Image 1 (tube, rainbow over the protein chains, first blue to last red):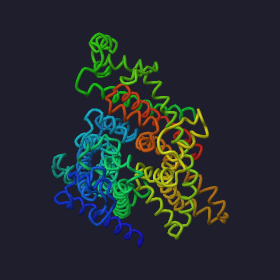
Image 2: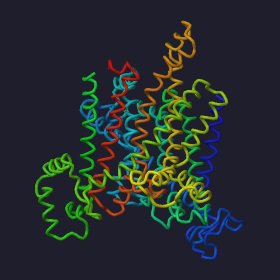
Image 3: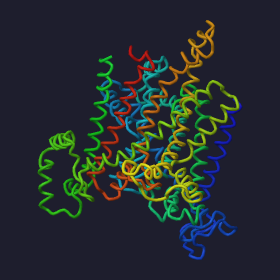
Image 4: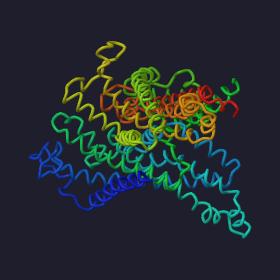
Length: 272
Length: 314
């Protein structure tokens, strides 16, 4: 038990730092993240530019802070889309049963049968490589995972006495679903959305790194890394700091996710 | 046994079919004339008209799908807009590059991570266990593209041991080719150790809790026999499934590593095709990777009874 709370604390600390940096970054940064300053081109970390400056003399710390808020918003929006769509599909599928269920399960399984990032890449080819394209593509790619968990929970509850009681007392199907079934999905969904936030953050950075994400000059951690690749020899810090940020936040989310899982849903231990 | 094999193959067929449907409709969802999209901006009106009738665009959508599917089964995935090469050839050539790297990395990572995970589980909550688990959590959290850049920085630039840009095929020049794939393999290896170690540990812990282990110990079997006869075989099966998933996922995620190390693999082909709106190549890559993914999982499923006899019954 001791290690669990340590996990939660360290995880919470990292994620908390990310949230604070993102919030501050969306309203205030030490420098203008877009301002070019050729005198500071590829300047190393110093008291003026704490984390150095990039190939256009833009302050790395400022760009990291703005990037945190950009990545945070993209990830939140993605998780929101996947959760809403997945919960709707999963509960319809589990509650109605029959043919609707069979078709939805077949589609879910087929979508889960190939890597999420691949589906996202395919969808990006349609939606276009930008912020909205990413949110839609990743949101749809992660929907099946949510749908499967919600369906499982709904199925396990459908035949229980308190659901019968709700039906007998004359509640409509929708009311029963919203009032009695879905609240029971919150625990497993909390665990899943936590990890999903991490997957999205990682996928978004990966796509931006590939040049398929948020286009420059707007900073994200992924496209900052991509821009740093040619300057690796002269200015290693350009590649070090954004990657360090991604790793720390991901580590925080993973630790927090583990702690949450052990706490809320001991059955899911060891999965994924 | 035959029924088991057939039923598993039967389960894979709808998935592959659905993937084909998705890939086919992908291009129909892009605004514009599919024939014009498939030929690119430079195509003449005559060739667009010719492709229109080849694809059956004047007929209904189901006929179009049937025509496309027939072509795919005959190995015809179309022609790349940018390089004018047949997509099937392009995809296979690039796949060889990616597959070599991925297979070596996953094999090495499994050899290192599975025993380490089992040992961690046996010594649960010991210092060794905590260390291994922490290392795994750390490795898992480092994105491959950054890990790759750091490895490139250390071995390529600071130490200067390995070439930073370019690629030489291992098949053409084994000794020089090897130098170019060492860093990507190391990157993927380190990352997958994190994933596999956690899984191996979790499945070993799961088995250690079960009654038949207690029973085996209670009837006086030496601990060594309990482990080799009862714990490891049962813990290995779920790990094997995960190794399959990891293999498949890597094909989807290898694009970033190939970008870091400028390796002309399948992932890079797909990403470049998305950049260049080279729709035949996009379709070909998606279809190919998805089919490989399903195949890998099918093979893992078929190997499953070798490690877990209970599966045969179900």
